[in-house]
Length: 397
Image 1 (cartoon, rainbow, N blue to C red):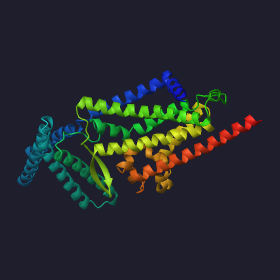
Image 2: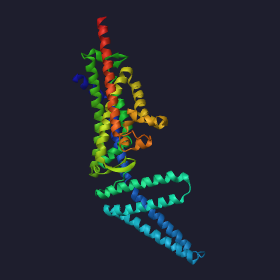
Image 3: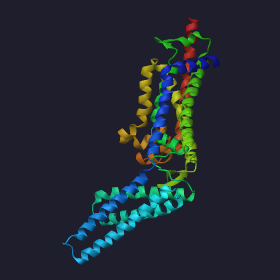
Image 4: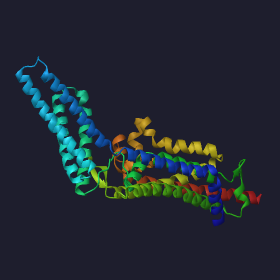
């Protein structure tokens, strides 16, 4: 049995297109990391842009003051506005200075004050505005400001270096970013691609070559599933380790204490990245095993690798995003095992909010995946029993 497992794994690894697939995953990780590194100065550039806008506003108001058409009261009003803009400009310059000198405590204190001021302005504007159509827009702005304030507060309390939380660059936070963006589709597609080869390799023109081996049906099934687990979980582990190690090596920071915003009781809360990371890995492993079992059952029905690949892609990736297309199934979406491919979005509450389904959370997701795995295992046992029975009947004939 172990010889057969070794044979299947080597057969998959020897195919050049499979090795190329792994390298593609590596280049995707590196490319995204470089993009995130280049996005770290967005806040600094935004502050610099605000200074330029302030200088332009001062120049415009100064020109108005120097014109002959302005009375004394208007000049005083304009001068007051210029003084206020100069004060704001000085605050922005101080923020840039703290940022560039990495005086993070001073930067966080000043930036929190700035965010508080922005929040007050949004509230005031919201009260003044009479347009109901703008209510959601203001609520989103307030929510985004609150989120940023929570993150900056976490940085300050834990004495952490600044990181653009939208484009993280540290070991664990960057890896979680990948799990929230490209990994669900990338790893699922690669896994299904490899599984469609592992489980159909023995079939040639609907003939099962594995029957020529001295393996019982149960040994053949277990061998294929173990080989699938080794390959898929191996790719999953390699991609996860590569992303963690690259980001940690470049920044010298694994980022385990950095915050991930999680929806708890309808409120955003900062949870340490390492806590979220463990849950994401756990849910992804169970999801991968579920996909392996499903792929094996489908391979018993569909013996052509390309057809199997296309159907599995539609089932896994297609069903994962089906609630976005058919809103009517959103209330029942927590029962679909496929949506848990987006483990990070499940854990941080994003899917709960998107699908308006409070039942989408880590504990229920694990229960759905485990139940799904048990059902698939029972189905495999039933199919094995039927196959064994058919083989015995053929021998009797």
